[in-house]
Amino acid sequence: GQQVMQIPQYQHVQEGEDFTTYCNSSTTLSNIQWYKQRPGGHPVFLIQLVKSGEVKKQKRLTFQFGEAKKNSSLHITATQTTDVGTYFCAGREGGKLIFGQGTELSVKP
Amino acid sequence: KAGVTQTPRYLIKTRGQQVTLSCSPISGHRSVSWYQQTPGQGLQFLFEYFSETQRNKGNFPGRFSGRQFSNSRSEMNVSTLELGDSALYLCASSSSDRDAFMNTEAFFGQGTRLTVV
Image (cartoon, rainbow over all chains, first blue to last red; front, side, top):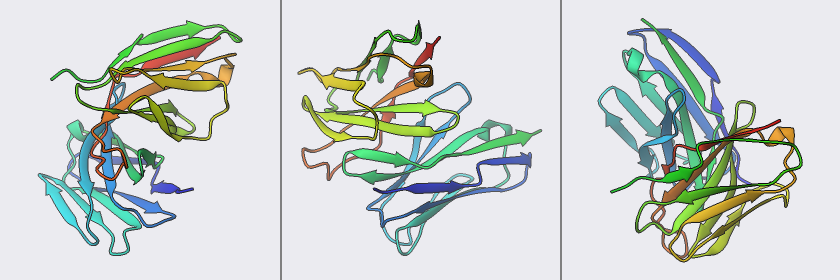
């Protein structure tokens, strides 16, 4: 079955530094979704990418979908303490989401 | 619009017991999925229900089962609990067509934190 791998597992940054997490799938994805889970919270949808090579921005967050639709990345510019949490990518396989292991981001003020 | 509601929020059970968790999806959503989240394994897909039918199943033993009612509310049951079943169980609902081609984002509930002692 489909496997989604995500790196790094942890990232500690100083406030104001940039952050990137990478997601790779063993198979071609029809689309990829990104979620954020705050400590003690539940995953919250951030964005969905569908097209090959697609790039979407949400304020300081930039999401990319690879040309082969097998990899994706999330880049945060100038992190803030509010960015703390775990970021998950997820590939859809029909009605189910296959999640990456997540990247836990901590931000030192 | 009310979000996804899971009950109970916390549970403590003893090994060998069984447990039932409940999930009420967002109104109008017919797809309900269940996930197990643990620190070591991340978010693992359990199963998905659509219009009262199990449409997808993950790689969990038969002790894990679920069902969906005509109002789209869903329950999952774990029988003969083991220590390793301690986890956060998350339910997610999404709008979906019957062939699962039009799946959109998943809306997660707050989860049920199950502790098996």
